[in-house]
Amino acid sequence: MNRRDFLTTATTASAALALGGCNDSNRQAIDYSKHPHAKENDTKRVNVNRNKKTIIKLATSWPAHFPIMGTGVENFAQRVQDVSGGSLEIKLYPKNTLVPALAVFDAASSGQIDAFHSGPYYWKGKNSAFSLYSGIPFGFTAEEINSWMLFGGGMELWREQYAIYNLHPFMGGNTNIQMGGWFRKPITSIEDMQGLKMRIPGLGGEVFSKMGVNPVLLPAGEIYTSLERGVIDATEWVGPALDMKMGFYKVAPYYYSGWHEPGSILELTFNKQFWNKLAFEHQAIVEVASSEMNANMTYEFHAQNIQALQKLKELNITLLHYPKDVIAAGKKALSEVLQELSDKNSDFKKVYASIENHLKLSKEWSDTSLRYFLNER
Ligand code: CA
Image (cartoon, rainbow, N blue to C red):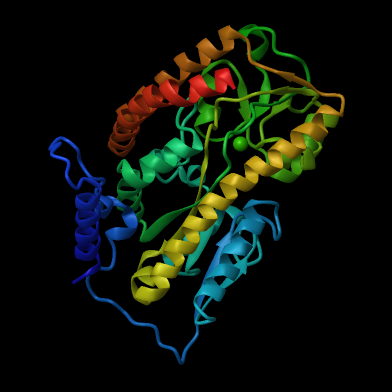
């Protein structure tokens, strides 16, 4: 019995147990054979060679020991080594130690490295659809995007489109909901956004651009100084934990809640040939450890953000929400950006259609359950 058969049989059997004595023919068991991990490796199993250690050369877009993202990958590497009994080892190359931070995609595609940890929206220049795998403004929460990826068809689309680049992606973490950013002056209306110079990348940057903002791309090391000197008026980054370490509160004290990155996915991506040659057992270890990394980073962002928010509140900052006309302009700009990119790129259109379907249903369920609860809590 191969793995898919086993999963299907096991699922049917447990569904039969759960439904025992129940004649409700409309009830459907979850088809776990649809889980991306269940789709691989049905054929050509390669067994582990116990006499030879397998090494994965993995480069990241983060500096060594970078909080949460960098340390999360280090924990993942340690777990892989421990669970494999040392037969699988990940050799980590932090940002710029083997390849430049934003060259990891090409390096893994060509086989210079075996794998990388980064974020899908950095590769929108290859294919604008890739930015959608990070998420969209006003889109999925971390929980919702995980459900789209694993059970709503997202992972299949992602793997199909990355395969063209000889790559095989996994989810490798989630920044959880991000803050809107730090501003030198408060925003009282959409007029205050006109011509504002703001560091904001990805689809969020395209939306802000349509709203009249002048998005600026800066290396991480130059953001603070640019903000301090007034070269830029505002910057977004991640959330309280990482933002506080950057010191933005000292020079731009107006801190806005956000909607441009509600649950951005980070990726663990393999050279596809390297992945296919990896022993079946080692593939399973990477699948399990990457799921753990994906969950743990999401929760660590939450845990560190709740602490950092308390510390920030003791400093001289003002927590604010964007005015209503800014939100309305953001939603209008988003629909224009999505339409333009869908018209230009059939891959984008296909991925967005899948997101739109899952998001529509997610909103209804989340409004019915989570929004009610959060409002009443
Ligand atoms: Ca961000």
